[in-house]
Image (tube, rainbow over all chains, first blue to last red; front, side, top):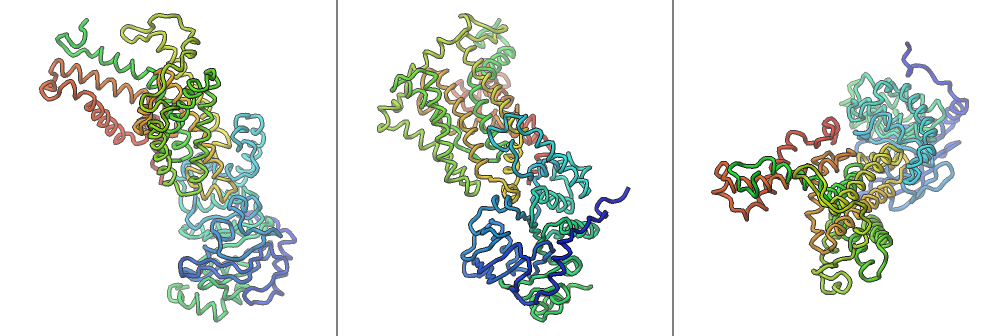
Length: 291
Length: 339
């Protein structure tokens, strides 16, 4: 039996053209993209006297994998929280797929098609793996207090959702765990579940906050493959990551932040060679990398 | 047959029947129903409502005042009482459920105490009767009793037709609402509610408006508590502020946790166990003092029975919690997964 994760997904033509279009884009912070799914303008957030995020302009290309890198405290997770409605900025606006998102609460952001995961995985420990997946399905008729009593109104939808959830679980190699409480999964399996669960929402843009953090190195390659497959199936991906090898191997585009600001962006080779990035990020970690 | 502890030996049969009389009685049904509401709020949705007594209070007073002041028929008065519980749920939930969990705990316990003190106050005396309460508003409820007069039961465990009527309605409501909670928890609605208990941010990140689910769980659990409050004062034919001290909430929590929080039958089983223990220890202490069992008679006076039985109940609960932290019906694995 072949490992389902290794079966390649046919790359949608617009995914390929979106990546090719990036080749013509200049490598300077805040540069405009040919087909942006997310456009951020003047977003600022300070905690006390500390300016955690100060992004004057940022565009995320549709259909590609964009990595968000930067040293600890660069404001990557804070930016994630702001864009997904988990925190409110002091100023600024951003458009997702042509829709203004400032002030939109987190659950509406998710329903509009921008779904995030968390740095510390949030598996719903006492729900089964399958229930974790089913929870994420959108527009469920049985989720209304009164609708819940009328089983025949929602059972067909529930069956369809279950079918889709099981397909995803097979894809992510978690189908054997479907009836186990999610709290019994290993760290890497929780990351896989969180990613599969995010896809259950059918998002256009997946925001992964350190998807490889705390994962057994043997699982990293499988996780990377899943991220690529998410892109190849036509979704856009933004992810925060510390491990430079990981970033270099799968990103189509890299954005580097330091002290809340964008300091560089471009394709992996260009960013890796950018003196500002080396100075702010790679330089300070050079001794630790050992590879 | 020895009576009133006058025999030569401790009468274990009597202790057993005393425990059962209370454990199956209307008080246990009231606490079971209170705990069914708490189970929805705390056991499934993870909401720390420490003011369940307030929900019982508003429904009980709502019913009594509707009859006493407005001469409403009893069924209408019940609706007034339940509407008051809905109002209280929304009033407490809307400002606090967007905040961190601890705020709900603080607000609910304070609100329940404020309501009790207001009901007791001179200013409210015209409506609530103040400390004298409201009497004899539930005659119609006993007129509906279809059970012929007499005593029913086995041996010393027997109930009057009046008690049996209240018990039947009470345990009937416990059964109905346990079933309702079971149906809800097996639905997608219940899945969102349990997800909110596990991790609210995860549920929000998946597109669930967690505030609405918390408000619904708080209010619906409060309405179930409101029914318990109505049942309590119907049984007494009397409502007074003392019925709704915060001990009521904490006894109901105790019953819920003993039986198994987040289990459908946890509240009912826990309440029977709790009241069997309270009455059983009381009867045991009386017998033990009368017969000077293990020298207890020389240490304790009959007047000490009331407080001492609760000390023994507390001890029994500690033993239970050490050996089964998940309660009788709970799952140990789940408790261990709870971070």
